[in-house]
Image (cartoon, rainbow, N blue to C red):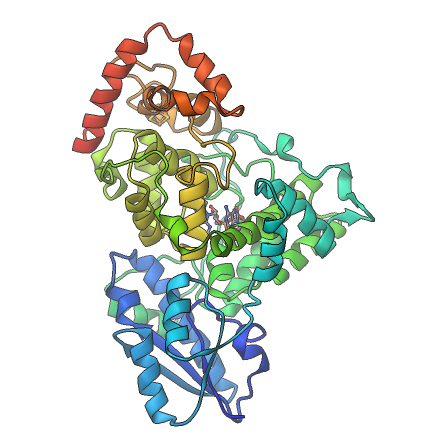
Length: 490
Ligand SMILES: Cc1cc2nc3c(=O)[nH]c(=O)nc-3n(C[C@H](O)[C@H](O)[C@H](O)COP(=O)(O)OP(=O)(O)OC[C@H]3O[C@@H](n4cnc5c(N)ncnc54)[C@H](O)[C@@H]3O)c2cc1C
Ligand code: SF4
């Protein structure tokens, strides 16, 4: 039967979603570049460039295969679908289940028929079945189930290498003056240039906008970075902006790569003895564990989850998030500069710098979430909401994580080379030179000591608070820090 197949910009794979069963001889492809998506918010232009150029390239490959492709610009997706519907009267619209609550509702209301969303390795009902049976939703428990269910890195019923987790080996600080292999650059073509010119943007060469480029990025990771991924996965250095991270999240999230393709390539490299177990396990955990868990939790916890604000945090977004010149904190200045340049930093700056700062300063979770959504290349709703509300800000009261990821300057000093070039001293918590992270970490614990004392994972830290003889001075310094951060002078 003839159909209109609607392809959202994050379903760009020929073998998955509604395209899996598509026939170029009869099906019409609908793609909509909505103004809501392009101009609705202050999106990072690198992000818009990546999403739009990838979609236009994908449309071109479908046309080359013989499909009738209706790629149009409209005020909203639904407006676009109405125009295409008028042109192809009488045809029903089919789409794989969308990846956000908002789009799900809008398409359902428009009468779109859904097929299963198979862009993940775990179907939504299967995740629900797991979550329904849990007392708390520990990612580690989910991950072990995934290893067994998907039969990845298993020797019969035992985990390969004898352990489920090699975290102990994977916490190295950055080596001194570390360069590492050159990063892959993606050459721009006519479509890229057209999109860039429409956006008034000069794109980097960091992100591919085609399936071919995404596959090259995967091969580059496996050949040049995978072996060292594990040990250095938490390190941060000004010498090398990505160390050995894969840079694959944008393609996994827009569909240019499927998780199964990435897992297969990783397992193949491990089976041929090209990478040690700590890297293989560490990376595979990110894909079959964290990524699947976060998507599962997004759907399981529901559309209101994003509004959680357990600590009643009200502070407005600090100016340093939009302008790195509004801070003297070297770690934050470097991180925001990196984001401005290429719309990406790895998971530790996202968690232990940006989210940590928002957490300990009592920044409003929804304001921070909006900013994170706007500036990251890979920021889909399903992944940003649980990572920020649950993992980064603990705004859900512990539904996802057993304790908040709050840390002072000592952690950042150990895992990076940022502190050497900083105006502040990570060891100090009071005085003009005190590291704002260190001061605010203790102040945060003090502000919430009653609730943290009840949690066995945080009670130890609260106990440490009792040993601080300079707590009164620290509280005064914390107020100065907050004022300085609000004014963009700290
Ligand atoms: C506060 C916060 C916000 C984040 N926001 C996003 C986001 O909007 N989009 C996004 O894709 N990832 C997000 N992440 C997860 C992670 O930071 C990025 O996936 C990763 O930095 C992308 O770079 P990479 O592809 O080189 O990842 P690698 O370090 O090479 O990891 C491999 C893959 O594992 C997956 N992965 C790892 N951690 C997570 C996680 N916590 N949640 C989901 N997938 C994960 C990603 O698909 C990633 O590509 C966030 C993490 C935190 C702590
Ligand atoms: S001293 Fe504090 S603010 Fe400065 S770089 Fe280190 S952690 Fe960041």
